[in-house]
Image (cartoon, rainbow, N blue to C red; front, side, top):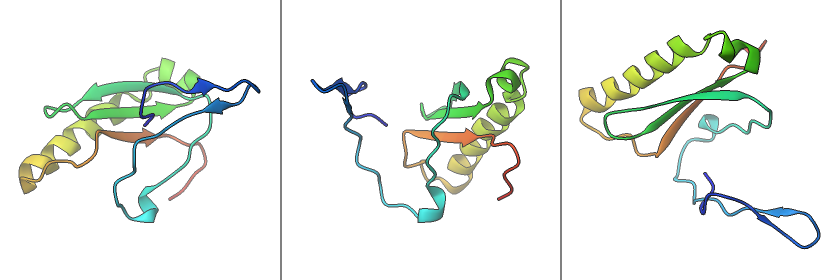
Length: 101
């Protein structure tokens, strides 16, 4: 996440952005997504932001609604079941066409 909320435009037109330090995590949990996806957002009981992002036309049709509902509920369930708070400020889910993982 951006540390200060917005990038700075440098005199030569490039953008400078400062990000929060990434907490230690397994490398298979990291992904870089550079696209023009639409996102819908929800929050857990502990104010964790849950995002579901996908192709604009799919999100407009509501195709991400169930994923957002389940993603939020699962995060809450595991926090309560294990009595361990989710350590990050957000949890992002991306629907990527033709991507099997």
